[in-house]
Length: 111
Length: 114
Image 1 (tube, each protein chain N blue to C red):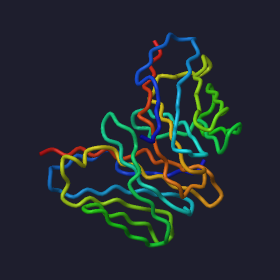
Image 2 (image 1 turned 180 degrees about the vertical axis):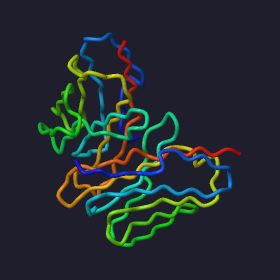
Image 3 (image 1 turned 90 degrees about the horizontal axis):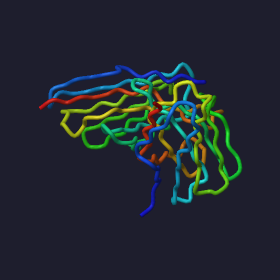
């Protein structure tokens, strides 16, 4: 099936540092969703991007969808220990019913 | 209190035995999904269902079976044909399979085959 690649796989930062995870697809996506999974928990929906070049913000989190709708990023400003978890992107094509999840980026924040 | 429930949270089985994982939702969602999560592998789709009495194979359906006799329920059976069944299994639902709908996940079942 369609591949959604996500990098990096792991990221370890000091509290207060910024963090970015990237999601790339070889095919044009109709939309992209971002989920967060806390350690020991289940994925929880964060946001959806649909339009080319779209940028959305949630407090310290900034989500971008590329102009070609083939890539996306999640940027966290001034990380906090509550940001710890694995962040997944999930994309779909216009012809697909199912979301394809990236492998996720695990973020560790040390105080 | 609306949501998705999966039980049990931890499940142990002997090799060669079939095991059924339950998933129930009271969100009135038409679409339901089963994912498998292994360390470093993300979420891989096993089966999904768009509506009652209908289901489709995902990327890794071999060794698994499902049924959708009721809108609220989408049980997953891990058969003895599944080569490496030990994993974390997540059930999810959405209003429909239209990919613009967010998915709501259950708490998951961690299956260990001994």
